[in-house]
Structure formats: C-alpha cells, structure tokens
Image (cartoon, rainbow, N blue to C red; front, side, top):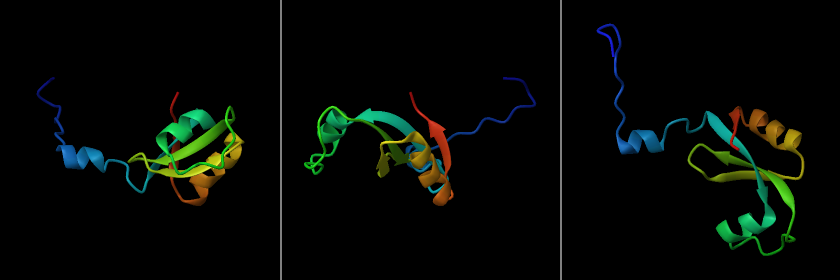
Length: 85
C-alpha cells in the first residue's frame, strides 16, 4: 500500500449487507440442489436445470428455466445482476 491509498475496513455486519437492494446474483442451479437448500420446494421435478436469481444476502428472488427471464427479473427490480459460476 502506498501513502496515497485509503484502506476501507468493514465490520461483519456491514459486509453482510453489502450490495443489499442494489445487487443480485444469477446462478445456474439444478432442481435437486434447490430441493436440498429449500425443502419447501416439494413440487419441483428432479433433474431440471434452472436459473436462480438471489439477493446480495443469498435470499432467493426468482427461479426461471431461461437465463434472459431471470436477468429481466433483476432489471425489473432495479437490481444490478452479476453472474456466479
């Protein structure tokens, strides 16, 4: 670090809320994985490849069978989408 740089320090609580209400992440998921993470999804067929949009804090926003629809959901909610691989 040089003398001209400022170092930003975040608390755990601040980090947990980083991007909240501004950023959403898009990720390809299998229905099997979703059933494991969200046991309430009992009506979803096994073996499906889906696109999931999650809030910055990890809360699911929507599921879609098409990436472009998931992206549209982010934009409709005025969120900046980022992809997670």
